[in-house]
Length: 312
Image (spheres, rainbow, N blue to C red):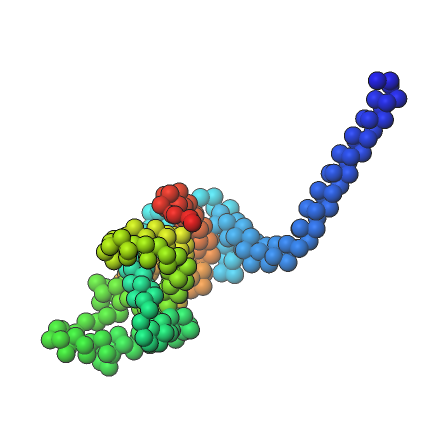
């Protein structure tokens, strides 16, 4: 091959490479332009607040949150040596334990019942999912009246059953459980709808084959329903845990973190430090710890839970 031919092929190769890179860059630019509104929204409402919170956690600040002097890791050290923060962590973990497993089990039981082909089952589906249409504030007010020691229906049921009355929201031994019961009721509608949708997506031929084989309903539940529902369950468990760690509204309305800080979950503790005590640095440090705590729990859940998820 002569030298002019080599030069011509080299130039052709370089030109094709340049054109290919130009097309890829144009495609990348076009994709970024389509994503620009979402990127802007995430930047303003997610990335910037996250970076700002991380920044403030390393500074002492005034009541308006203006940084005054560098604090380093002082806020984090003070938190881990604070009995109030440890109480908040304990209350948060107990709240997650009290609400997530019972809430999912209850919603699953209701979804299995509502998935049966029974006359009038549509009415019960509407009733089971009705809590989706209520705000946290409205639901909390309803439960506040139900827990009222004088006129609440909860103590009337106890009296009718021959049991002693309970100070539901004032007794340190019952306050967190009371808020947890209210939270389970509030969240059941959403969880129920997601699980019911997952159940209705399971191929009915699997149940027909199991029925022909003569297997029991419990065996079908364990070997067909739960494995085929595992992606939906995995989603519901993940979302429920994240929501439980971020609970605020019902705590604020029902107990204000009391009595004796037994319901002072970490999000409410962040609110009090930032907007009542005006300790923005400490509140930011707690928010950072909460973020990384939820992140670690979610990653562990993905690491361990996805192994048991059966995708069709």
